[in-house]
Length: 112
Image (tube, rainbow, N blue to C red; front, side, top):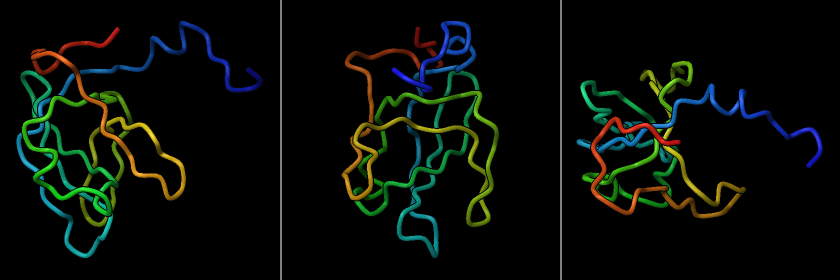
């Protein structure tokens, strides 16, 4: 386990939510970034995903994704990312696999 072990209280600080991708487009001038507009149930967020080498924008539209909703905003390529979508296989050179939910869960649903 080592240094990467966290407590349940530390894990509880992460606000994981279901988001519905409404729009997606490539970020001009970037080969990796996709700009997503994600419905988090009552609010829409702009989230930048670094998966453009593997997927076109159309891959994301209509998907229910897992979002880290309380991540500090970060500016990239002139856009502010207001969260993070989760994926598996994030090692160097690996194709990321977008994490989604199996059923039709309402946007904004808390993941516990």
